[in-house]
Image 1 (spheres, rainbow, N blue to C red):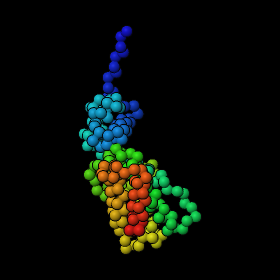
Image 2 (image 1 turned 90 degrees about the vertical axis):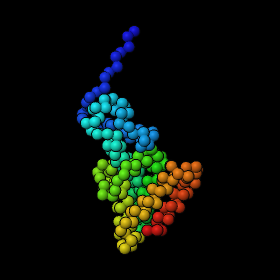
Image 3 (image 1 turned 120 degrees about the vertical axis):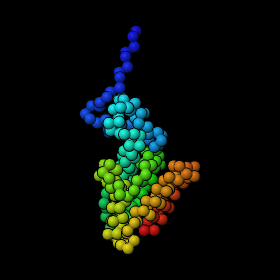
Image 4 (image 1 turned 45 degrees about the vertical axis):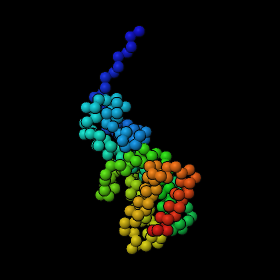
Length: 212
């Protein structure tokens, strides 16, 4: 029996969604192996198009990785918001503190559950001028930096964070939480048990709360 011929790679993608299909493939690669696994040729193979078709959307691997990094940050943003409870009867200060803790827990939860995507999210050199880019926003339309900034604004409005300490508070809170995340997935804290990591997370978020 004659084997059916293998279909040649497609040069176009239906509905004009090739760019997004390549990003999705890149996210899958990052999930499996981190940013080093995001290779343009492998993404095109998974999507089923030729490399030439991909070059119409991404000039090179770095361009694809940049897009994957931005999308992964949107996923981080989703995780940061996922644990925030609906507004209850708590006073404004208690509610704002709870929101800050939930945001930090969501950030670290993503690092633990999706280490490959977490690495990819922050692997591309960037600066704060791009922290509000729509490409980095999650389903709610906010980037990780915007979520943190909004939470700190709430703390200031509630009287928890003194106005003279508000400027730049994102840098201190973000640095502390991101540092723990990296130590957990790539540093000496990899060997800790889940219970120990939970304890470290609680202690760190306590320190962030007291520090601001």
